[in-house]
Amino acid sequence: MKPLDPKLLSHASPARRYVLLVTLTGFLSAALIIAQCFLISYAISPAIGGRAGLEDALPYVGMLALVVLGRILVTWVQESFGHRAALATIATLRENVLTRAGALGPRWLASRTSSIATFAIRGLEDLEPYFVKYLPQLLLTATVTPASLLVVLLLDWPSALIVVFCIPIIPIFMILIGKMTESTSQRKLAAMESLGGQVLDLLAGLPTLKALGREQGPKKRINDLGESYTKTTMESLRIAFLSGSVLEFLATLSTALVAVEVGFRMVYGHLDLTTGLIIIMLTPEIFKPLREVGSQYHASTDGLAAAEQAIEIIETPVSEPGKTPAPPVPTSPIKLLDVSVEAEGRGVLAPANLSATIEPGLITALAGPSGAGKSTAVSLILGLHTPTTGTVTVGGADLSTIDPASWWSQISWVPQRPVIVPGTVADNVGSQDSAAAELTGFDEVLADLPSGWDTVIGQGGVGLSLGQRQRLALTRAFTEDRPLLVLDEPTAHLDAVSESRILATVQAAKERGQTVLVIAHRDSLLKIADRVIHVTSKELVS
Image (cartoon, rainbow, N blue to C red; front, side):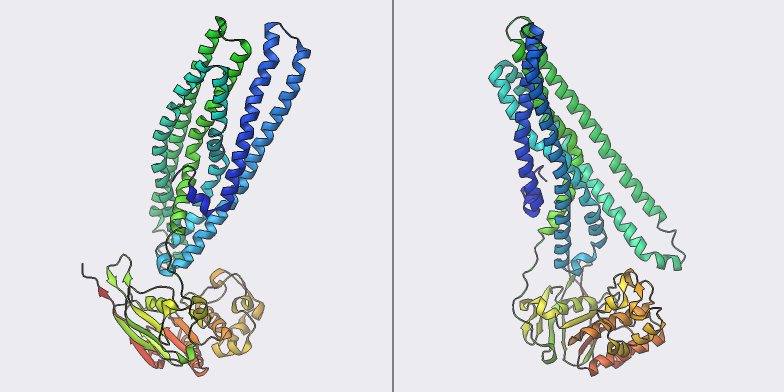
């Protein structure tokens, strides 16, 4: 990614405003630096030459104090707004990444959930050093350096010639060190994502591992990942210290060449003291932004690597949604016509050549072995995924041409792990619907809860059993009262009593006139279904 990449500016409006601000303050900084050098020289040169006293220097000292205050104010503005711009840009990119990840669908996200979570939470935070430290110096290089060089050229062309000769040396070393730092930053980001993903997966599965007595098993893997991340971090720091030392040496050496040349010419009377002092003071200011850009580059590479990955996700193409209003579910059969989906990374079609019809007002079950593509078939019907081959139609209309919002407004979807957020039971259901609770058997759950509908539960339903969570999700679906009810293994991991209540709820949904589509493994669900669709997979022929 370029140091000032237009893609970053196009995807984050706070970054554009900050670049404009820093550019303006950069020109102001250039003017203040040049003024400072002239005022110092005009104040002390006559005193050194014996041509003026302290009282003659006081006006210059007063103006110098104002210039110094001006530089302090400019620096404060840059850093203050740099932090704000960084936070705003990070928030904008994070929002855009998560929005695009959601638009790309659960199938695209399934294999990337942990890495995107780590990257969005931690990786993008590395953009702050880029905005606060690196970007201002980069823009100062484009303002202060040429302005100061122009002044030196107007004052004394031999000194300007030496500066022009020395300037390219620093960018050459910056490029060499930057190439080393770039690859290290990519490895560091990959190590951080791997470590974060493993830790998130471990935390998610820790209850199961603990129940099986295997909670110590992943310890070595986590330690190895942590050591890998530490190693890449220390490698980045080593290169950072090396780059800072090399660039400092080159800038000091270049400044010394000018100072020696100016000193000899002043000794032999070829250059006056006032001009010589201005040149000697301006020369470090010419090299300073270049030196700082090089030394701060390592602080920006981690953020730029994260921004590049964010832009890659944001620019991943998403198929345009349809515009046609969805046909009414109660009178519209849903058909899958020779549908196949290529499973990512598995080399199989799952489902393969699936043709089936889901009739309105009936209970339809999808059956088949694990990995056959039942959940994928449901994703196709929900409009969350597009088939590799074949089509899905609703009432004769191709689902890809239907407006997703109008389609989803007719669907209640209850996955195996329903989304339950921290809050009260009523907050999660949407209302205190006693009739829906009675239909799903959730009224029995409410009777056992300490505060009924006002009982507070945790993330994912902490405080409720698996069966109670399923009943809560079904109650929410009944409260929505939408014509199509989609259930993904609603009786999985439930005891016999909870299972019987879920089965009764599914039948009650049919009696209410809802179309029910259920993914089923257990015979009990298959027995109550009006129609069973068998889903199969097939290996791809290479």
